Length: 251
Image (cartoon, rainbow, N blue to C red; front, side):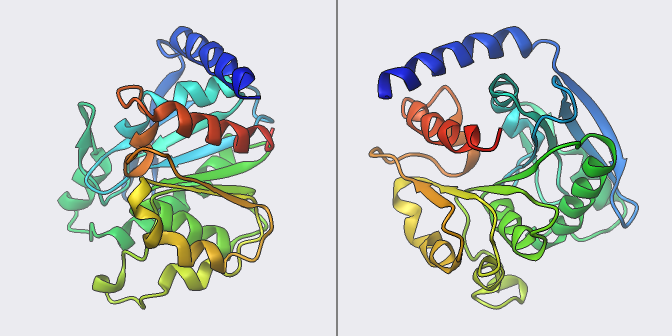
C-alpha cells in the first residue's frame, strides 16, 4: 500500500507542475459587511467536482496555498484560497483583505475573520460549487472551520483542520468555544498538526461524535498549519499521504 501511495505522490507532483502555471485566477468578491475579499481561484475541473475552500493561518495570506492548491487540483478538486481580514503576507503574496479592512477601520482579530469565511462559503456556493463543499483551515482558521462545520451540517460536506486549538479565550470567548461547536460535527473530518501540538486539539477531536474522523501526526517534529505540506520540509510526504487518503474518499 505504501509503495502505491509513493507512486501516486510522484505522479501528483508531476501533474501539478504542469498545471500550476495556468490554473490560478485572482478574483475579488464582497464580504457581507462590504469588505472586498481577494481570493485565488483554482478551477480546473467541472463544477461538479468537489470544491475546497482554503483558509490561511495567522499573519499570513492566500499565498500559503500557492504550492498546495495545484496539487489538490491534480487530485481532482477545485479550490479557492482567500485572504481573511486577520492576516499578513507570505510567499510574497500580500493580504489585500487585511489592507482593506484596516483602511475601513474594521476589526482584524482572529474572530473577525469568521465573516469573511462565511461570505466565501456563500460566494463559492453561488458561483462555483455543483458538488461537495469542503472546508480547509490552518491554525486559527482551522478552529473556525470546525465551528462552521458544527453549525452547518447541511451545506458543509467535510472539513480538514491543520493545527486547530482553542485560540479565542483572550478575545472574550469561552475556553471551549470551538469544542462546543465540534460536538455537532457529523461530517467527515481530518485533523493534523506538528507532533507536539496534539494537546492543543485532542479535546476538540474527542468531542466530535462522528465516527468518520481521523488524525495524522508525523514521527518527526512536523510543522504548524498547512505549511506542513510544503515541499521544503522533508516530512511533508507523510502529511500528503494522510491527506490524500482522506480526500480520495470524498471524490
